[in-house]
Image (cartoon, rainbow, N blue to C red):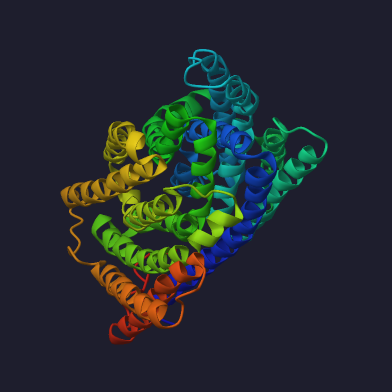
Length: 500
């Protein structure tokens, strides 16, 4: 067996398991989306979307960046003559996160009262207060599941994120709607999902790492305090990453109100498949990137992440074309039709494709120069904060989506520039082939779709006629990618990542 085989096998298993998790989770999200948008209505769904987004913004700060930083911590503490139990390292991490989580929850509840009435409705203010403490359940789930991934066992995350959390959330929310809890039912469902996630994740970590041996666990306050201070840059970077990913949602909610943000929230859920392409790799690439950097250095790691960018972008562009074909029908299914909804959805998935594929290399900045990773996210936030208020008055939710696309492109350019400063200089067009293939496919789809509509679909429904060009484009894109792989067999290989 070649030296490259273990790397390919580990990544394939990890990505495949994560992809299965996301397929299952998206099915649950689709069910919840129908419950929330159709049964509860756009306004109630908008309130829930804003409140849950606030929790998701607080989670990276409260978790102290340990969703990623627990990997080097485990590598350091479990090796050598003074090695500690991996479960005790996890308990240390959970203790730090619990302290931070309680403080952040209290701060969020206090800050809720300071929001002006012109920006938030009374219903939204109440939702903020009710959901704030659920931060604790989310951070326990994130950190404990990260520890399971350290052992290369992905099935626990598949079950936790793909089955336990989303289906508990959906089931409880549906039950709450049936008994008439129209304003708080989704919030109760979120709480139930968070508790179920935390409990299952901690149980899963015990099965991966071994018994907790609580009686032998001796946390060292001084050491933990030093560790917490060292995690501040990573935590700040994660916070800004979360804010950069959600600032459009907050601004739409504050500028346009609960109803429009409900529609915008539906669009954000519909773009989930493109987001999950990156996430399906992220769970396994994060620990492997840390290991490759430690063993082989930044330049080799840069070559490995460049290959990962090509793989992820190739898959994502196919999903973009698929979403373009199905988007109109999905908008109708979930009651999210508006003047700019379809165009906003396409802009969203393109922005996520840029962020997802070209953001892989940010892991190098994250570990080597966390301040630079923080600056990338800060610049994205500034661009969005400046552009969205300018564009939304005229273009409504489309303006917010276009602002995020612009921010994603600029962030990709900045990452490349700062990586060059670390000696990671990748070929300018290392990911050009899938982009060019997608462009040619779109041109073919537009022309072919026009020819088909003129000859066959003159009286067809608008949704069907709109789906034809993307489907033709997708067919050609798949053919071009297969030809590319045949001409350059190793172009989509991830063999440079070190697994041990």
